[in-house]
Amino acid sequence: MAQFDNRITKGSMIAAALAFVSPMVTFGGAAFWFGGQDQKIATHETRISENSANIAQISERVRTLEINAGRADERLLLILDSVRKIEAKLERSAP
Image (cartoon, rainbow, N blue to C red):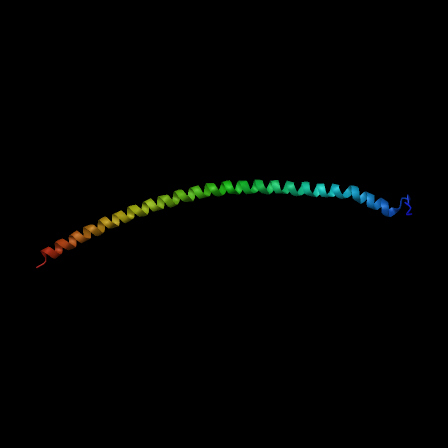
């Protein structure tokens, strides 16, 4: 029958110490990692809010440019219409 050796050796002390230290190191590393994630999430939230504000400003600028371009198109159409009328009058009055 096998016998249990109840002597305390350096190897068994090292194994016991590592058994207690290993979870502490794991917990510390996880806490550090999760803390870094919170900071990254906060940074990304700030960037998202800044980007949404920029998008709103750019959308307003695009809308203004589209309105101005539409007005310029209307003016150009009016000018072309006037030129056509003048050309028609010149063609009718030409001998």
